Image 1: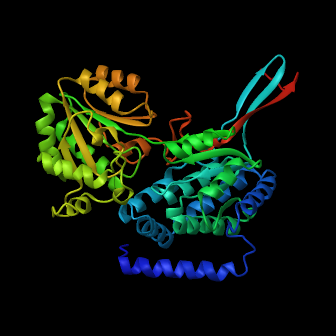
Image 2: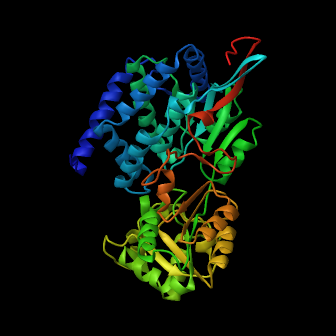
Image 3: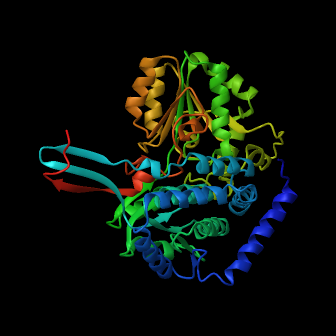
Length: 466
């Protein structure tokens, strides 16, 4: 079923009208509160009720969320709103990502009990909820993170208080309301998933330091991760990355070029997993660049144009300018007076390894290429420019020894071999998905079991039937 822009606009207005009319009788069942204190208290009460329910009931609630958000009108609405409100990325990619989290985020099946039995009896190690989780979500993937976290955190038995990025306030609020609509209709306790009308740094600080918040989960840049880690609470931090991709002389160059351009251009390079710089062995670099251009890359070869591009997207401190984050290659080039077709997806150029485009996580489809003498040098540089974020890296090679070497040295949470970066989160690759990738605190690709604490239940001298 094809839905055009006018259809989507009608859907958005219809759903918002429906929510506004239901709010008149809702008694805060939509999960949105005036103050952070009210939101936390409501989530605390809800979680105490939630503790009394069964795992099968949790499963029912998770399925209800998948069903409600998965309705075509809702998926299209939040995808369109996210692109328009944040000004980042593209509607079509938002749609892919929202479908991804609905389909590949683990639920209650992720919670597995460990049993130990012997002469002294039976011990169970159970995965139990923390209680009320405080979750900070980004402007880059606002709806995907809220949906993914809600499924995992509720499956684990928690309630969650969201503190979305203020520049994604409206779409985050509507996503939370849709989740609450699903939960209410499924018979869940009210206010398991909550937020505030006006997200702000002040409200986030209240949440982070509130005594009833037992676990903090931050998805964002290094600043927000540092903030949650400094609270003294148990915290899960999903921080920045600067993913390098290495291409050696044994790779399938045609496929590597296609994968790199597709990965780099996915939602205009917003995902932290996306290819941010290429380190290519000299022997194949020219052919790689040729094939990248065949797959939608625009090459900048003029030094002056490259200098203008740096000044355009980076400030005096070599920090990215927010207004270009998640913008298309065509849009960025147009700001320099260069007009290209819609087929152009990525801007490429050869640089040195110390160039700011290599050293900085750009989060826009600008892809520097560093030429090196051999694969060992490429691996060393990749480890260097990844900056120890331990987030994501890619390598295109048929040399198993070198693939193994890079994987061991770079120590990233995600390491994709011979594929686009997004294969690492389950798009064309095996495994579950998440948009909270906890490299700094070590949990990796989070799921329901990440949001639990281990508890030991011991029965002494009984129920050993070996």
